Length: 292
View 1 (cartoon, helix red, strand yellow):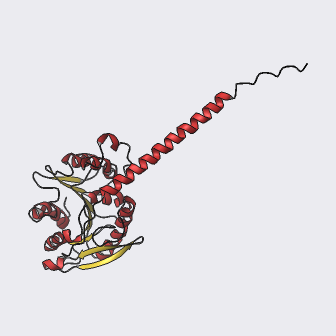
View 2 (tube, rainbow, N blue to C red):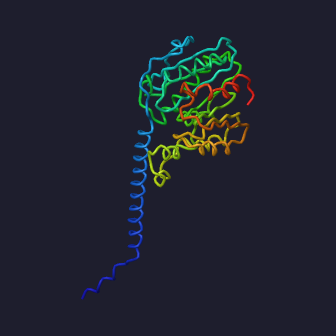
View 3 (cartoon, rainbow, N blue to C red):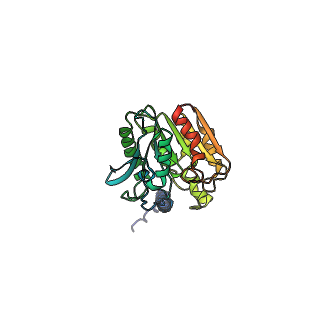
């Protein structure tokens, strides 16, 4: 009689169960990561509001300008350079806001010219007549390429400054640590504390979902690393980016800084005719004198 076979050992089964569970958890993690990426792409797509092409230039306002194009990756970007009468005058590069283009900033360039300040403004990918589609990655490339154009145009300037306005605060602060040569000062106008917080403020995503999003433009983290002089300009009545965003930024800056607070200006005060002179007065004074 054949002896009975020994019972099958059960010792390996828990290991297989563990392996199956690990694969299950990995699948859930991959699905969650993919879902996070899809959500981020959707919010990123909705966040950008490219401005249609405008026709106004500083020349239409009696100020000579150089309208030109340059390349950023495979894209062609449009730029406007207005030199001050004195080649050694301080120069400002502007990283503009959402739903804005060169035509919106033509009056500002004329105003700065009158104050003896040279200025450079450019349109991001997909904005104005610049080609391409906007994204965080492409706007970073645009900003780096634009700064090189700015330094070349303003090579004789005594001092160089960069300004990020609204959306442009994220674009500018994303690259400011990489800019060479470094600018002499930084201006943040109507800026936000982080991309996540801005998405919530603009109603693109709810607060409880925002924590799951990547935060490519964490302006607070960026300004903590700054050692350059910084001027912050914001209005308490800003209905687009709440004033507390700028308060958070101001507290995070370790180096020399100045917070300019307006009480009743709208979000787009920098480019609106009725408020433009008021907004730019303290900024132009700093640029002209170098005294924060």
